[in-house]
Each structure stands twice: as C-alpha cells, then as structure tokens.
Length: 319
Image (tube, rainbow, N blue to C red):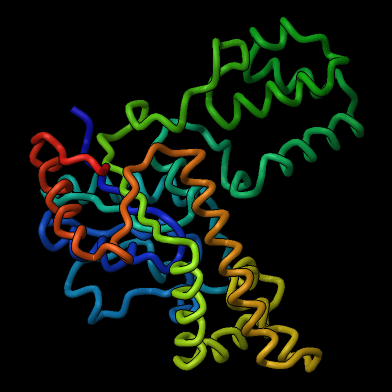
C-alpha cells in the first residue's frame, strides 16, 4: 500500500496554511512546507510564514532551513520532502504538504528524475547548456553524452540531428525514462504518484482573491516588510532576492521610485503570480477544488472528506 499524503495547494492568500493546521489537528499530522521561499531565515513577513501561535503546536518542516545567501532547488526539496514523508509516517502521523510552488509539489509526488540540483531552473537552461556544449565540442561529443545515458535512443538518432539529441537527453534527465518509450509518464494523474495522495486545491472568485492579496500586502507593509526587503537589497545577487514582495521595493531604496508605487508593484506582481499558480495547478495536476473563502461553511465538509480518505472510507467528492 502506498503511504497516504495530504496535499493542500493553490494560489497565494486562499487559506492553505490555516487549513493545513486544522487538518493536522484532526488527522494527527505534521506539515511540510511546499513553498520555495519559506526555507529562508529572516524572511518571515514577505513569505507569509505561520507564526508560532498560528502553528498551534503542529510540527512544521522545511521552514527556516537556509540563510538568505544560500540557494535552494527543486531537487533539494524533492529529496528532503520524501525523507520527511517517510519520517513522519514512521511516527504514525499523516504527512501534509501545504504550499503554492507547483513544480516542487509535482516533483515530490511523482517519479521524475531531475538530474541534480541545477534542474531548479527551467528546461531552457539545460537545453542552452547542451547546445553550448555541442557548439564547443561538436555534435559527435553531444551524441556520446546521450549514448552514455540512453544507448537505445542514441542508436536511433543521427549524431547530426542536434535538436533531437538534445531533446532525448532532456527527457532522460528529467524523467529517468527513454524518449523511445510510448510516452512520458502522466504527472497529472494522481494514480501514478508515488503516494496515495489527496490533493486539495483551494481557490475563490478572482475579484475576491485579488482583494485578499492587496489587503495582505498592506498588512505585510504594516508588519515590517520594508525591513526584510532591505536585508535582501544589501545582498541583491542572491536567489532569495528574486522573491515577489522584495525586489519590487529595491527602486525605493535606490531613490528611483516612491514607496507607494513600489507597493502597487508588489500587489500587481502578486496578483499575476496567483493567476499563474491557478493555471499551473489546473493544467498540471488533478486537484479537488474547494472555495472556503466565499463558502466558509464548507470547511467542515472538506475536513470530513479528508478524515474519510484517511480512514479509507468513501469520500465525499466536491461537486
């Protein structure tokens, strides 16, 4: 039997953290953060970390594990997250993954090989690197790279078909499977997951979501976001400085923009990011979608469906 893992995903500001804590309380669980920014120490406000009071004694993992000068990758998250799932399960508790970084969650749940820490960047980075290697060392040398990891594919592709060779290497490194197989694994269907997953997608009306995002940014500013952003402004070349809510304030520190315009930029970028998150989860993963923002009375129904799934009872599906 596969290990049960509850996943609570969706865009920013829809209540993922609060729901994950409530679910952990009733299901005897522990929370694994599925957020690429909450790993950083000292970045509490802009990453919307739960406070100690909000955590209510529930153990939370993959939070505050990196200094702001360090890098973090999807590969690192995948390895750490899977180890945590095993450790939490061995203690007789339910692993609960909560966050909005879609690729991190997908990489955790499905058997896809990332090829190393460098794969936290887009596919384009690998493609560019392979193309540059071919330019410098020749098509034959690139083909020999493919031959070393996928001999069958190499035998079916001419060394001078650089584009096809690059693609074959990409598929092998990202999935661990040959491009010659009938198709890439379906990373959308939860039945193909490494775990028995219940994937809850939280959403709400677009206008409601945008109002909540705007209000959250105002609360963050009142809580000290400017001071956190200044820490990153002083080390602008680090990975963490690219986080939304921080880099938009740099022009204010430079004296090239007003604070008001920078705050507006944070709100705008946060709204755009939420839209991308929704699109990503809807297109890439089969979630059960719930709106407990406009319909808070449905939260108890949702929690009951989680308990039923945990007990292997018939689920009450979202309609």
